[in-house]
Image 1 (spheres, rainbow, N blue to C red):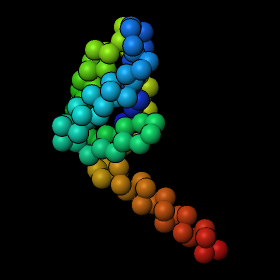
Image 2: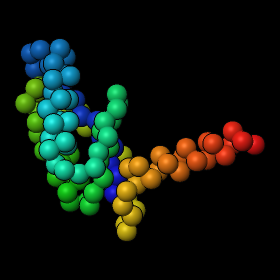
Image 3: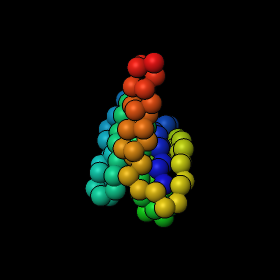
Image 4: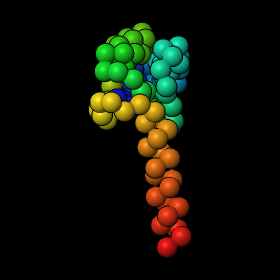
Length: 104
């Protein structure tokens, strides 16, 4: 499965000023997980089995919780049993489709 998630703290003193520090704590957990991942300006996407992916998301959410009294979590998942390498595969297929359109 692929899961794209965004997590941020709110509430508490100084929470707004330290969102990037809280997000860095979450991304550190993702990176240490050993799962394939990619972080961009809006989401972090990780690939793996259901239990391992959601365990990482939980740990990342818990880490962000240290920075505020509330945590906002958004998750979007692509669950496709039997497929791996989709974190890159989906992008490769998209680029191939774009190139094909440009040639027409």
